[in-house]
Image 1: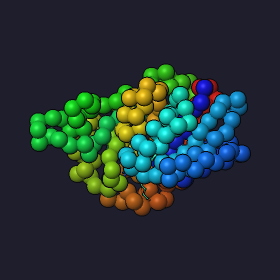
Image 2: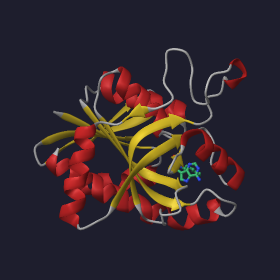
Image 3: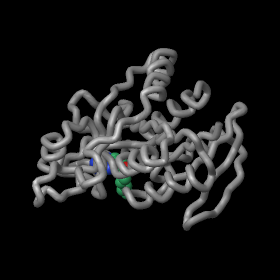
Length: 228
Ligand SMILES: CCCCCCN(CO)Cc1c[nH]c2c(N)ncnc12
């Protein structure tokens, strides 16, 4: 069993690397991959850099080059569902790409031929997260996450994403990681802690809360590794 733990930014994986203590660093495809054994589990950690292209490359590399057979993503997200407050955790039940648009040809937003609007996360890992949440006495929401190559800081964009995807949160990597894992038949789990609410002051909120929210998500993910 080899587990991939992925984030998009250094701050999202730093708490995980700290927990691992010692690890081997491998430079590959303009990135770094950190390997360690944690409580008898082989782990590869990396942050992809921001956006769908970088996250596609890293997820594919972790699976194809480092032979990971499960992928856990830990990071932060913009909250859409008003029930999601700063620091709250959301587990993706399914994910979409909100900026994939060939609606000019009558297709739904987020759809291209051969693809699907939504990709569902692994139910087994979602069930595992419920066990962890119970043990930690934490409430973790499950919901739809929409992914696109933009930092959303506008109510209108949020509303449009809700209209098309009924999304509860948004970010910039999960939807592409989902496609990679589904196509390569690797169970995946996307966990995010809310850093902002994707409105006009999102960038200020992100700057203030990203680090603390990233820690919340990372700590939960590491509890999942104990049981995976
Ligand atoms: C230096 C700026 C780095 C932004 C990276 C943000 N990540 C992307 O995965 C998560 C995220 C948190 N809040 C968001 C928002 N409002 N829109 C998009 N993505 C997000």
